[in-house]
Image 1 (cartoon, rainbow, N blue to C red):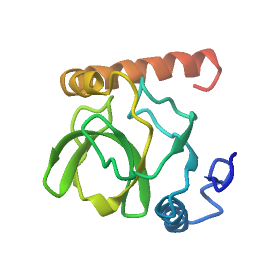
Image 2 (image 1 turned 135 degrees about the horizontal axis):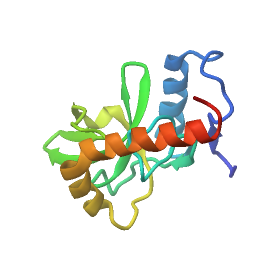
Image 3 (image 1 turned 90 degrees about the vertical axis):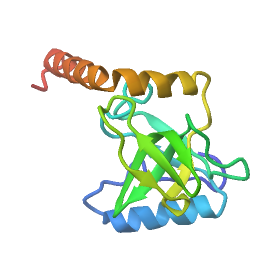
Length: 152
């Protein structure tokens, strides 16, 4: 971990309330410092995998663009999803493997983003067209590998 980075990797959720974790993340990123987290869930499969370590960076002067994967807050929960549409003052977000979009999110609720990757606009298109199929593939994939690992 570099200077100024905050990691919430090894912090069990049951020990620190989610609202405190959100506050820590907001403070870290608003101070223009990166945040290291571990992805949870399958909503961004196959781009992000459950348990994958990720470094989130402040949004910065460049702003948020369609195709970016952003960390946003809803209630006391942080979610990593892709921006699929933009309108003045808000962004529509969606997990790549989800069948439908989340909701429109305002800039203050976006804490940071993952550095832009090649192919991000293509993933927006794929997510819009094949979101439901990716959800089903992800479920089959998880079921198969959980059984293979003896976690059924």
